[in-house]
Length: 462
Ligand SMILES: O=C(O)Cc1cc(O)ccc1O
Ligand SMILES: [Fe+2]
Image 1 (cartoon, protein in one colour):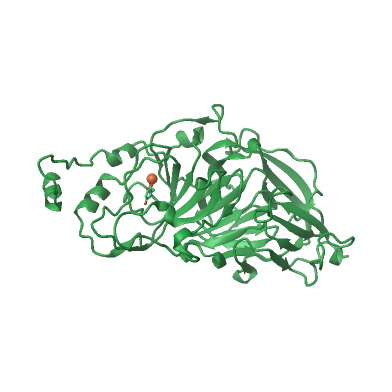
Image 2 (cartoon, rainbow, N blue to C red):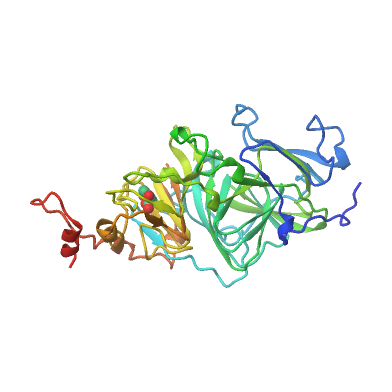
């Protein structure tokens, strides 16, 4: 038997400590100690090195083979060795998991938030998580939530596990060192991580005050979109996804497990590190992806292509082609379309569009939509480029050019109608003047002249 506290091969602060396995949806195998994975079976009577085997199911046992997800963890102690869960900060934490009239408010209006302020107080990733809005109910495994996190300190001997859904984390400021049961991973702004239901993790801040966005889905898992006529390659390529390699710590000490269950938080203490998984195998495992690896595809002739062309990951619903949520980005790229109104078009959508900005400027809104801020254009609510963008788009020369250089905006697009938390609706960073973005769009209609020129538009705007 290994004795407690003698062995500690976990050190997350140096770059060499991150080792990844490449691929999307693979059946991975990883061991931090050679020979720790049982050969030929999952549950030997006694596992190598005296480890315990534990299955983590990401889908019901009986889900068909192509969709079935589970992993086997070989750990020093089974994760059940903790004291009972007790309510944690009831009524105080910022998280919501049921989106009804008790917890949330409704408005179809266009909403924008200036960058969410990062508190000066010492707040870790869990305590710094606030729900902006969502739909549905975790208990029915139906719906989504959108959260913002702002954090100023690392989680200290605390691990977080979410019984309610999978979380897609989009850091906007500050690199995150995320220790997971499957091993450590580091994500920087312009990278994302997905941590699925039930997987415990702890977030350390590598660059001080940090901020980012979280998309949580209560059912299904994120997958790569089908490519159809695009062919076998392009958009997010499978081999650019990275899953951590096993790394464990064998330490005693007081740990707190915070469990999000039905939108409430519960805490349980235990006398040892939860990151004691020495080896694991399976296809239910967290992963990260660098958005710079996205191979963007778009029109090389004319017209603005729908933003679905930039889908990184999708969580499918039961309705083919209609997503519980898509994670879409607006990456730097060339723009070459001829005779085209190039920015995002005016739009009313049967889906909800929540957007955030990681860095730079978004092509449809040159001011007001800022890194660390957000916008929500709800189902069928009109939106589109602001007045300045419209003027530029209708009067500019359409040379080939670059769009969005140095920027990265993204959208969580969902089939659900979102309700907003009071926190979000009343937030002091809410931009009450957002509607003004569209008020000065000029009327260029002239029933006597079919072929309106740039000069006509410029003359009209004087
Ligand atoms: O800015 C938006 O609203 C997102 C968006 C972008 C785009 O290129 C086309 C449609 C659309 O809704
Ligand atoms: Fe839109």
